[in-house]
Length: 219
Image 1 (tube, rainbow, N blue to C red):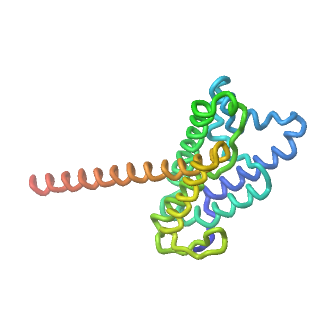
Image 2 (cartoon, helix red, strand yellow; image 1 turned 60 degrees about the vertical axis):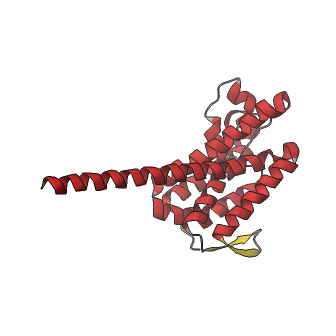
Image 3 (tube, helix red, strand yellow; image 1 turned 180 degrees about the horizontal axis):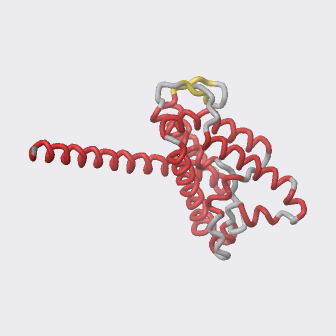
């Protein structure tokens, strides 16, 4: 695994660092209202139509360790994916996975837990990062990653072990499993994205072959 600070990863790192800095400094003068505007708060999204929150929550984090771990994962896996896909596709994929993780959180808080969770915010880039982890496991399946920072494991196995842990956490941890459910939905969203992209690519290739055959027949 090589570390690459590619354009999309730099953008995400700077955005997360700036968001955390705002939380810790500027927000002191506004009585904590930055979270109510930029974190994903079910009441704000549903009742006050703050729809941008489904994307801006990515740039806020709970504490230094939360920010550090997410930044580390972005650096370790994001650069290699961007080198293969390009900046635009990586950002589109990342924010798609993040948004789907956010919508899962909103659904669970509003329709499963009800009024009790309407004012509980979600923040952090983990939903998009779990989507990137899935992509990394599929693209670089034989690479070695460290599970829990200790145990070496091939990327293709790492992804499914991580998915299993998140699934069990979301099922057996009650309300405390909501973040795990959001992480897992980020991975599921990534799988859906990749399947659709593969089918579109296959259809384009088939269309290209058909066009080439028609041209050859006419000639």
